[in-house]
Length: 208
Ligand SMILES: Nc1nc2c(ncn2[C@@H]2O[C@H](COP(=O)(O)OP(=O)(O)OP(=O)(O)O)[C@@H](O)[C@H]2O)c(=O)[nH]1
Ligand SMILES: [Zn+2]
Image (cartoon, rainbow, N blue to C red; front, side):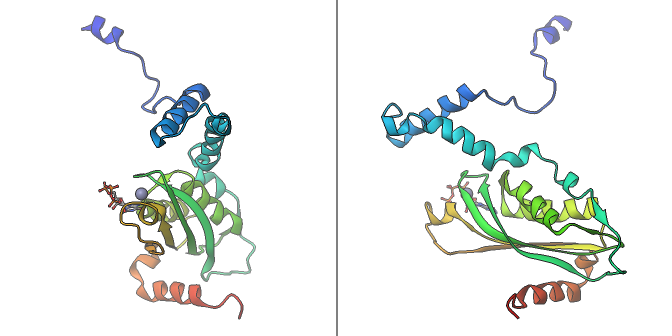
């Protein structure tokens, strides 16, 4: 039995191994062939390298810890306790089913409990989760739960509205269809009044 166990490859963790740059470029050449093109023609010679670089940027959310972004808080807010909302946070993600873009905007609100967080940090949390393969439902819950668990406000409200290119460019081919998802945590979860106030504030004109 021991001999059998010793012959199995050791795995440091359950994380799959990241491929090398050369392996990624070979995979892109395979996809170019699959599309029906010739990876050896001049215009495509550097494409595998460019795609590898683009993937590093578009999927850099796997290397970042969203909770870390919320580590710095401010308490000198004159006792401000009401809703803080960052709306229209544009994001680009990729659906985990087809690896094609999801383009949308996030609206993030919370009810502080003695401390607030830098406004840009809410957008950073959105971006970190957007830069991973996603379903919209999972991303909505991840943004809300991370803010709830790390900042520990009285409640968090997150609404995402997005267009899925997998529905626009292929398959059912419905351009312009928008998917809406929401997650409410803490006091928001049990308070339809606060949910309505959040949505009413979202509709308030930014040009008023
Ligand atoms: N719930 C959910 N579904 C998504 C999301 N992004 C893409 N999808 C859907 O995932 C589903 C995958 O369905 P499958 O039948 O396995 O794949 P498919 O044959 O490519 O499906 P079609 O898109 O209908 O052609 C599709 O209905 C997509 O519209 C998302 O964020 N959330
Ligand atoms: Zn998809």
